[in-house]
Length: 294
Image (tube, rainbow, N blue to C red; front, side, top):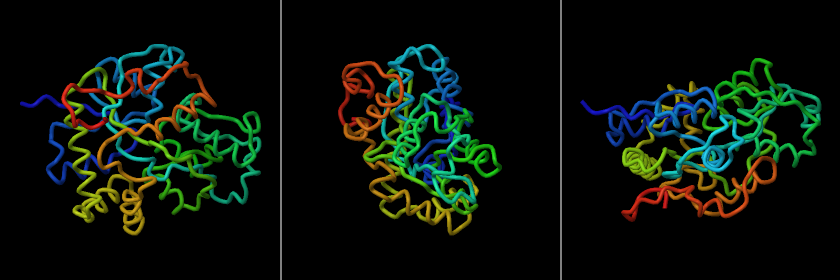
């Protein structure tokens, strides 16, 4: 019996599920929902997870920053790029009429010292709101933050990957997008992981099939079921996957300009060591050429 490959994800991965439907992702790949980035990396570092679909900033934090929420680092690496944010943007609660109304309000983040939070701070800065003008709440993963936004648990948060589209359907207000070029999701693993590289290759092939128009019905069906989207909204999600600035990364390459955006946000708003982090082992570098992530 094939050993399961446990993959931690914040939101259901339509890409992974489409790959399984197309026969490109094997049945041994098990998608595991994680409640937050600290929980995801605690499981990865302990061996409970074999790979993670996560923000590249989380890889930075748990490789280079000892002061991360777990207080420990490890040989975590980006194996391949998956998408460019899938619409990552700052959303305000339904009924909000201007960003100025967020002054003094509770703003939801996964954890304060993390990638999507840094993008949120940049968006709020651009809207004229500085740290101290609003309060922060650590609410965990994107599905949890969406629920909080729609039920009054926060006044604004960063959403993407279909959660943004659901929020719009419920009347939430898009206030500002993430900076570009941006890298939203990567495949990450601990150390050199042939199994994670195999998953990355399968997801890249799935992405190429989607972008080539070979899986439209499957994507719409999986998006509707996994993300609880209306049929018309699931069709919008499919179009989002093909957006060159926000959608899928067909070749799996974690490009330097996008990583530089992520690193720049961390250095501006969070904790980051000096030096060339990209050259410091951030990206998996298998001996064989042509693997995803290079």
